[in-house]
Amino acid sequence: HDAVDIIRAKRDGQAVPEPALRWMIEHYTKGYVSDAQMSAFAMAVLLNGMSRDEIRVMTDAMIASGERMEFSSLGKPTVDKHSTGGVGDKITLPLAPLVAAFGVAVPQLSGRGLGHTGGTLDKLESIPGWRAALSNDEMLAQLRDVGAVICAAGSGLAPADKKLYALRDVTGTVEAIPLIASSIMSKKIAEGTDALVLDVKFGSGAFMQDIDRARELARTMVALGTDSGVSTTALLTDMNTPLGLAIGNANEVRESVEVLAGGGPADVVELTLALAREMLALAGQPDADVEAALADGRAMDAWRAMIVAQDGDPDAALPTPRETHVVTAERAGIVQRVDALPFGVGAWRLGAGRARAVDPVIHAAGIDLHVKPGDRVTAGQPLFTLSADDEKRFGRALEAVAGAWEIADSAVDVLPLVRERIT
Ligand code: URA
View 1 (spheres, rainbow, N blue to C red):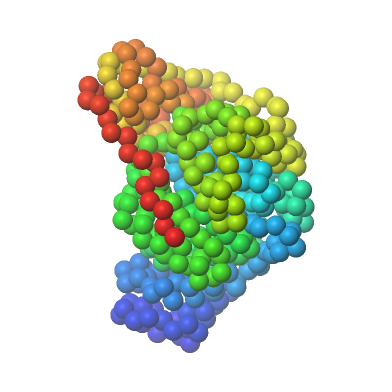
View 2: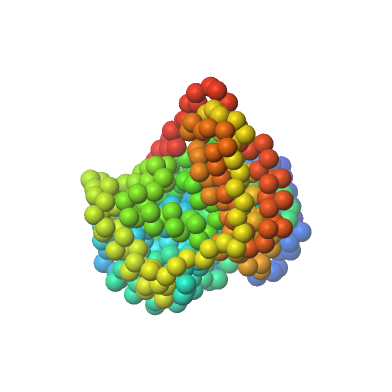
């Protein structure tokens, strides 16, 4: 095979035959196909797309570049969730223990935040002692004993994706649906889960703003999972408004614990329950009473066991901010919108996120909303609180959120959070 011929074929809108595509991925991973060639190929894919079969082959070649995990020795079904990411999206935290409370294993390999979207591992690291890195043996033991594991993905899973994603990031080719789908699904299939529920987000705080593109991505990934023997379904969910009230790290853990205690914001509870029902249906328990497991403390027990198993102290105080700044309503009325992207950027600038992969996050930094769209407010009422370790950060965060909320007299139609289900 020749890389230039493969690039030309994709450039001219032809399908790339299976052996050629496998060769391309394998030789790129090994360094024989150059970054220049692979970025030209990625751009051709972005412009001309890929067939369902090409996407399957591409995904399979990326899986074959690394190790594959295997959980069949557990003797219980495994089911995982993947979210395409958003602002205030802490759903994995209450969801994994909730599903594990039904005797299902949840191997939740997670990542860190980059940009305005948070990372599940960063959030959990607010808990004193908690450890993200587990060996494969530790992970298996915890899946057997506790059921839920949220830990860092080892470097052995789909190394081709790691290399290709970094290249896409600097060549304007992140947005290609075949490349996003194969990237996400190669890691999930290599992880060895029996079933997978995708939370594909659309809206200002999401990776895809447009619901039609989000639907296309969801359909592509569901087809890919199904073709690879992983039972996969997807929910299309609204990310125009931050999820819940907490945006940050420690505050998102606090909110998750409220949900596990039977309280918490209605939207976080709704999405946690909806995803838990999807996951348990795929694991053979379509009638599981997920509300009861939140109300009677079984999900909380699984959470505590999960945190303790990774050396965290579920009773320890979480970090609190040194400085806070409250923004109040300039007038009375009804909150029309709270726009996810600017609030995500604001929390990021306060230190909740990182600018470079090597930067630390400030666990106590972030934004706590006190109102959501549809709420009635009086003039002077607190709308949200910024938290940081240094008050110098407030200026740039306030610039980010300027104009991101609106109070007016008209009633608002709050659209459903879960918009579509894709199977
Ligand atoms: N997340 C991934 O893991 N890969 C992509 O390509 C996009 C989002």
